[in-house]
Length: 136
Image (cartoon, rainbow, N blue to C red; front, side):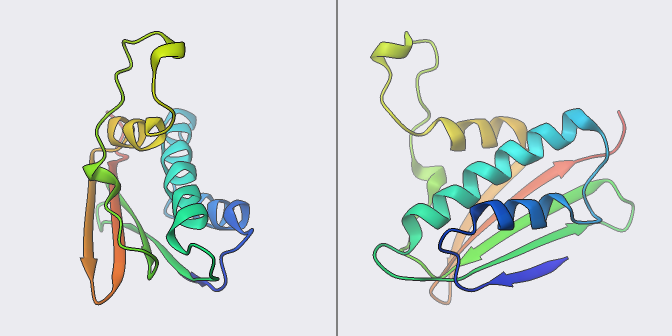
């Protein structure tokens, strides 16, 4: 499944639901929870920060390998160059009142997904998340 959203302003919910309703998505509720949280965090980051003071686009894609084991979710945008994987992980051992704001969503995404990769190509940010969805 592949879809272009243009513009993305105020469309976080629509983009997230599009990805979650893809026929590539698993039915297992635990997997869906982890995938949804990862998708919500990454989509929200793009919608809120990629296109400062401008209206932009996002292309989203899901792909299931031929064996039906590996789900790949890709987000592509032409917003401000930003690699969320370069952000330091929050210290989750600190009391809440001592933690810095932000960064928890990407941290959880890295915890829930098997692989998270970023690259910048032809003026576009491309974030790829992979999850093994085969029954263990």
